[in-house]
Image 1 (cartoon, rainbow, N blue to C red):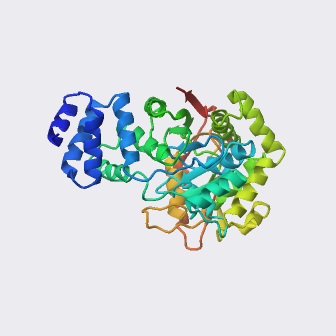
Image 2 (cartoon, one colour):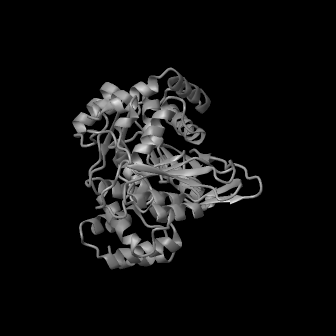
Image 3 (cartoon, rainbow, N blue to C red):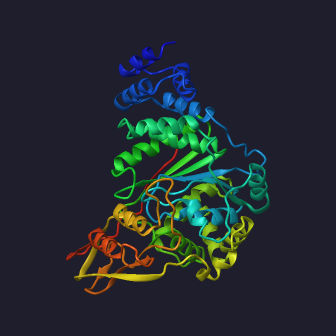
Amino acid sequence: MRTSDIIRKKREGDSLSPDEIRHLIQGYAKGEIPDYQLSAWAMAVFFQGMDERETADLTMEMVRSGDVVDLSAIQGVKVDKHSTGGVGDTTTLVLGPMVAAVGVPVAKLSGRGLGHTGGTIDKLESFPGFSTSLSTTAFVRQVNDLGIAVMGQTAALTPADKQLYALRDVTATVDSIPLIASSIMSKKIAAGADAIVLDVKTGGGAFMKAEERARELAEAMVRIGTHVNRRTVAVISDMDQPLGRAVGNALEVREAIDTLRGEGPADLTELCLELGAHMVVLGGRADTPEEAKQRLKACLADGSALEMFRRFVQAQGGDARAIDHPELLPQADHVVEVTADRSGTVSALESETIGLCAMKLGAGRETKESDIDYGVGVVLEKKVGDPVREGDVLAVLHVRKGGPVDEVTEKLRFAIRIENHAVSAPVLIKGVVTP
């Protein structure tokens, strides 16, 4: 078959056959189809879209382009969780131990952060000695023995997706629902999950700014999961303001520990219970999300979730003493308070700007090669809807000597808006999409 004929067919809005999609993706992965032809196809998809079967076929071809993690030796239903990225998104550090504590195995492949979004591995490496460089054999053994393990993603997973994403990034075709959905789901399926829970962010700090587009993406991913026999649920959650209060690696670890003690921010706790409930139901440990939430709340109350976190950190070489003595975690040289210049109510916290402020301090990466500082970041003292008096502390910067304090303080003042009228806190859970 000819590649140009396939491009023309999609340009005209027709559905491509499984063989035609296989020809494109496998041919491109092998270097047999040039960039300019796949660029033309991606642009045709951008304008014409793909139907449910096409999108599922595309997803599975990207899965087949590389290795697939075999988790069949792990006892029980393996439920993976994926977030589309946000600011202060510490859910995995809380969710993993909670879900494992109620008997659902957590076998998670995670990545590092880039730009204003944080990475789970970076946060975990705030524990001195923590390592995610596990062999698959050690990874499986730890999940069976303990109930939870986190391993770094390898380059051998979905290489075609990485190639296609790089091409989309320079051809203005990133913002295509079928291409986004297949990219995310191909990585989750290749990671060996039996079932998948998705946290689809929407708002100023999210990839999908508009709630309507976030719902469209959530529905597309759930359809893919259903089509390829992976039970999939998507939760649409707010990212118009950072989740929790801490933005920065060790700072977020401290917040995760507080949450596992039952003393964390209300929004982080709420989202973890919502996502965790769906993981527990998919894992067969509860019949309804309501029943699952009660089980998760119980493991927070009796300390079993925190104990699971302690054992998990220790199993992967981390200094678990830091859970009870957080001063052992990396710390900044000093703190700087950012205060309100007038009274009123916090009306907005621009998530992306706040995330970029933390990155500017050293908490995030501008490029994949950038080093990060585990101790620096931003802690918010006020959230949307909170009343403020002139002089109140809005946020605390954790900084290094010589850090860009003045620049970050100025940006942060613009990111934290104060109005004279009452403002309601945003709704955190925007919706749930199920098969």
